Length: 150
Image 1 (cartoon, rainbow, N blue to C red):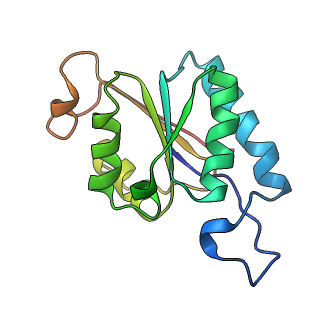
Image 2: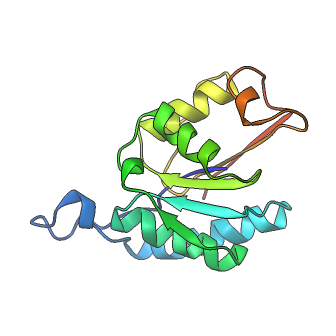
């Protein structure tokens, strides 16, 4: 699963980008999207998150719904697609969620889905490969792909 962080707050112009929190919409959308994904029968074993506050807060909302732990990874902040995929692979589990940022998130989703996809805030892309290993993710199209948006 690949998730873009929920909508962030731009009210404090002096706040560093890394420290921006979720706004009211983001705080509402993140748990709602977690419930949507759960109803679809998807539950990651691990949730990885950028260290940016808005990504951490989004990941924590998902993790509460999934009864999973959040692992923060500094390299996920504004990461390129290869870094996002490498983090998912390195998690050591089959079902992982990565919560990070655009443009890397949209680029990776588009690459894996083999079509242009735009990850709006709090969107969740779910990819399923029924056979193979993490090494096959780039080489074999997913058996299933679903994009959930708030």
